[in-house]
Image (cartoon, rainbow, N blue to C red):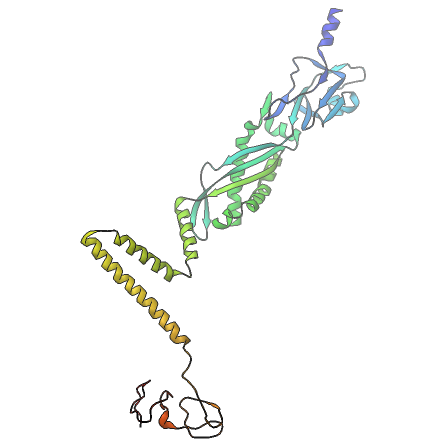
Length: 350
């Protein structure tokens, strides 16, 4: 009787696993030399998959739910072990695979990525962000990654996945030939392209890349300064004259703070430079005013009121002769009949 109880205690009647961690991907159920009883209960919770392995081969895979282990629902395992109707127990290894998402996995470029840029030539960039993955095919994952471990955590595969991501980002940059500035301003779109690019490599491992975030792309210090300079020049593109005057006024302010003869000489030199700037500015303003000045005055016929050129001697409408003695023939300005020269243009009058 005691032997029967001992043998009965060696048979598993219930198999389940409660994950108390946040990073366990695979858990091997401890058999401790025990056999699994035919008719025993297997409980697979949500975000889990149970895989039975016998003689080093993957047999049956169970999805979430409560399963009664009988010959009918373990066909592959029954075939491998030749389990008949009269058999009471069987031996197998049971693995619980966690199928939830493993989020907030950080990645970053250990070494800079070299790229050719249309604006800055060959430059080296760095990037960092996060990604999320999960087990898509438990059987493939156990074959390709898990091996013969007792447990397997997300940290065990994270470094390898990071190297896949960085390699995929480098290849995508090289193939797309995107400019550095365009790349930095379209991170979300670029993340989608990289995700599609490396997705197949994750699938080959039985995994799914569920999310990828590229948080930042950084450039060398020299490139960042060049970008800042280019941005500043763009703002001042149409205001170079204003910028020059501002810098000259700023220089005068600095020179005024310097005491002694050196400061005086600096003030005089700066003042002369500013004088030239102001003179050029006034000249430009005068030219603008001259350009906008209307044409010479016109004259109207006192007989019919028709508009005529200021130098006209006869009306173009009625033919009346204008009094040439009262109008300068050169500029058309009214003059005194006794004047010898035009007061407006200096033309000698007959």
